[in-house]
Image (cartoon, rainbow, N blue to C red; front, side, top):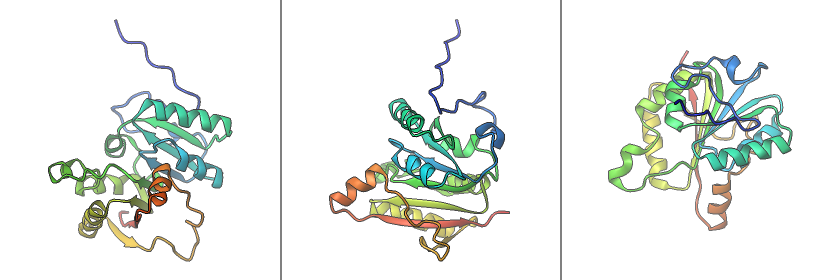
Length: 207
């Protein structure tokens, strides 16, 4: 017997085929700039962004079902039709599922730093990931990264410096696009504990 598919939560996106790259129209019916919160946790950041920018579409990607359900419930209560939630592993989402040249900004905020040297190969940011990311970002699209782990920040900075797909830019520019950038639950916790937060922003060079 085939397993019965789990019904989607309100606001959750369940692809018809997880082994085929999506089209932009499958994610959202309206045309608007798409932003992705990769590893969205409890959804606080994605929810705040969707409220702040109602003219943009937001996809929150999270692996843990409990967090997905929590985000969906909060988005439904807040009446945010511009936010959808995808339950999936982060690397697979970027490398195999997201439409090419579809994402205007991708946010990777406080991912697992895998601090032990023998686990560094598990870190999300590497040359292969950046190559795949450059394909799903629109030309001139932005990759935004935050971490409280200095070693991972240096790792990410080095990876981007060697990448032919990106060049680093100032987090705050004259456009004011990132004014009022909301905090994640982890960021609020780390700052309350007196930890430093490191951030970088890189622009996609691919055409």
